[in-house]
Image 1 (cartoon, rainbow, N blue to C red):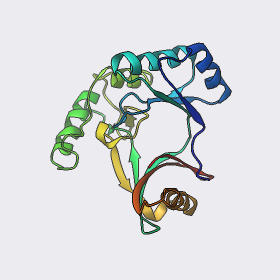
Image 2 (image 1 turned 180 degrees about the horizontal axis):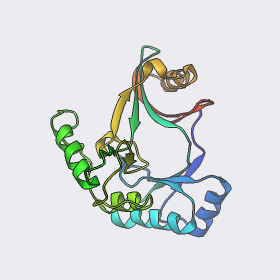
Image 3 (image 1 turned 90 degrees about the vertical axis):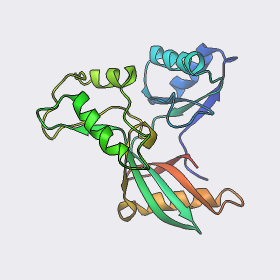
Image 4 (image 1 turned 180 degrees about the vertical axis):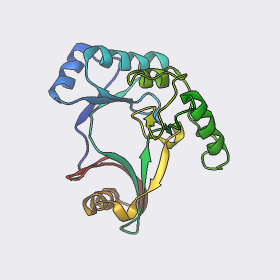
Length: 215
């Protein structure tokens, strides 16, 4: 009875043509990710075309070396980790993808360097810096930016769709603002696993409903 994104799994023995037909039946953009992955590695969001699907699949198989892959519908909303203990939601952390805020005079690369220096001063974030790689450059390129671009004052530029703190993302405490329906979903998720007394529940939250991604 816990709401989760629709989806399925497949592996290297699967026929990709047949798999893609199942992807099309979901009738939404999809998320492609390794079954046994962690820290957001190999997660591709808002995959819409067959070419993008095949690229993500082959990258996970060939570059990352994973065999089993999960396909899920892409769920609109914001990413929250709700900590549940004793049948109560006691904390909720909204996670935003890595980003910088423009000052009208610094390049994007300079802004990344400045933010990473701040993160390195925080013991919790010191190893969780924004890493400049091809995926980052490709992502900002879709919005017309390069690392050498001057970012407009007040403009926030995100570097990914993935809200992992480990990949340079930011965390914001929003327990007081979290909808009651989202708290209820988190609490029921922990209750659904026999013997589990406390856990962090990762949820995509929007105004109408919330869906559990991971416990």
